[in-house]
Length: 204
Image 1 (cartoon, rainbow, N blue to C red):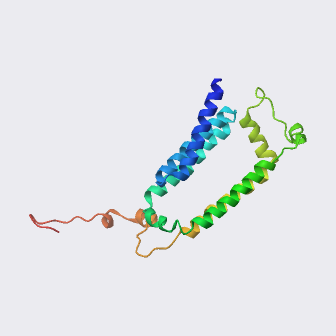
Image 2: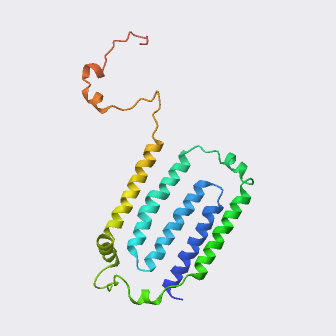
Image 3: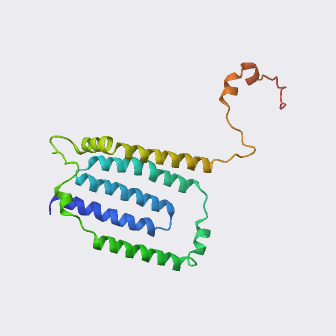
């Protein structure tokens, strides 16, 4: 067994085990930590395939932003998980039925999936040699030339989704003191500081 094959089996085993622990862990914090471990090992698999750009994107975007955000949200929210598990048996039959349907669909898709040999022999954009152009540069050229409008449309959809999430969660709360930069900058020393002469052994 070569070193590359050994690392492949190591990363693949840890990724599968971590993915299983994500759904098997009862503590949500541990589930997020296992999710981060699965992302890191999946990035290792991308490195073995020579796709270093996808590996770095997986680590920077998913591990550095999404998974850490999930971890902070789970740790900061005071959620009573014991109360959430009380109705688990009530929804178990319909959940099991939906899971069985998804499993059958995956089996049908994977079992009947075939690749047309003509697609492999005649690619739309030929892959350049590694000594001529790196795969990161090749992805950039394809992404910002042939699929430029699709890339911009995807970014616009994500922007609209982000603005919609902010608008839906933004609520005006009464009695909350908000910061006003203009009022703070307009304050002078006379209005900001008040000097009082306190008598000896007495309070204000």
